Image 1 (cartoon, rainbow, N blue to C red):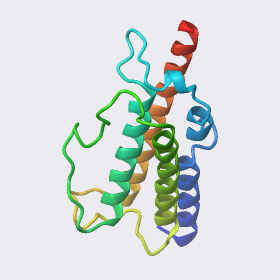
Image 2: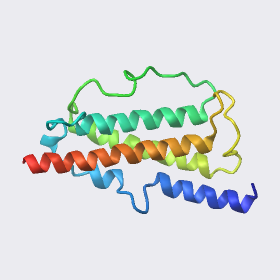
Image 3: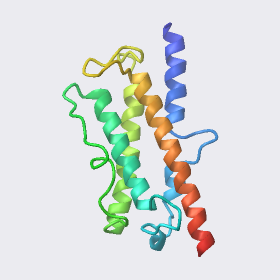
Image 4: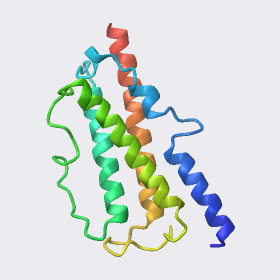
Length: 160
């Protein structure tokens, strides 16, 4: 792939990860999520807002770790990807989850922007995965669960 094409692709991927365009952003969705609703699960909903937020953070961190760590250790699903509680233990835990999510997102964007990393090369410690694949998995996963968070909030507010 030509360098100019690679730079263009890297910019598009950074934008996708940043949830620009048609996507809502995480902070816009959870930053002002009502405290009383963070651990609530309306009838028919599979998860609480806390569970979704923490799951997004945990999974994103795992994808980032896999993408850059040649000594990556596979996690156990579902135990290592979901929080053990339905509600955040504190306001600080909620806030820290958001900050860590943002930090990991920034680190993935920096990894993708660095042209020394071939987006299409197989990761040496993987089973055929590429950095491009991991970025797309991350963006897709985040988008899916962010949509769930938006819908969950609407359900909770309607029950109000």
